[in-house]
Image 1: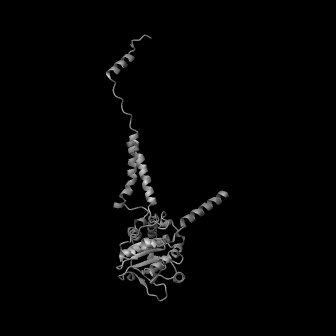
Image 2 (image 1 turned 120 degrees about the horizontal axis):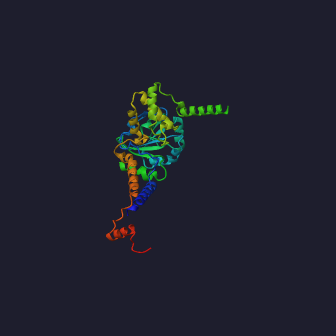
Image 3 (image 1 turned 90 degrees about the horizontal axis):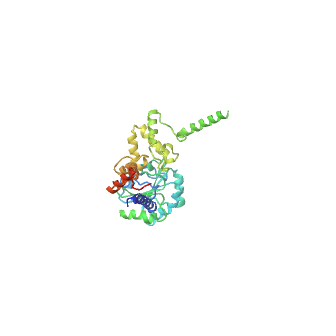
Length: 176
Length: 155
């Protein structure tokens, strides 16, 4: 019996690797956000439209859940997820705030003109510093903030496929 | 002559290698602080390339993080402060070397556990063969006979 111990050990390792590789919802490139359960970082940035009110963390503490979407006109996956954001805002009546990451207001507005504007409010994070405070590693990333300003969910990468139905909407429903 | 050219080209290559990343960036004026910032950058993971430090990555985010590191060091933060600033935003993952804490004890112990396993199996397979049982009286008598030549049979 004892001589099979090494064999069992190796088989157990194979089993473990196989499970880790095939489990759904695991993306080894995705880094778990440490901000879940934490209050939103303080920030204050200009709106995209000229003369638009500044966007601050106070806009995320209005008592109702709000999504914060980091996007950019130069970002291809952002184009892919735009339909989901439109559905989220139009069909499900969710409040979505858009922050343009390292983009010029003109280009970001052009992007919204072309694809539709799902955002109730926008902000321009021209140097990407707000994104760093949110632990964003790339666009798009979408956060769900509860009414009192706590980050409850982070969607890494574009909301495509069944991402909206399977992940984003359940997170929102859990809040309501 | 060829050798000279080769040496020149090699030195050129090395010169560029050193400045490959920081060429478009302004180092801190205080060389002590710049050295401190540079050392720290080697410990910070570039989150888009993941297995490079921000010191040797060309990614946009790495450049931004280098700037953050320099700014905070310039403001008088200690490297530990800057590290925790980044960990607060990106988690332990941002550090190339995982910190030793409860959740990483197993990680840090794993090489030793593995080594112990290997040693155990190596030592076990090296065990000397078991000693043969002592001779019975009859066998002993037989042996004596053989050794002393009086086998009883004529040759």
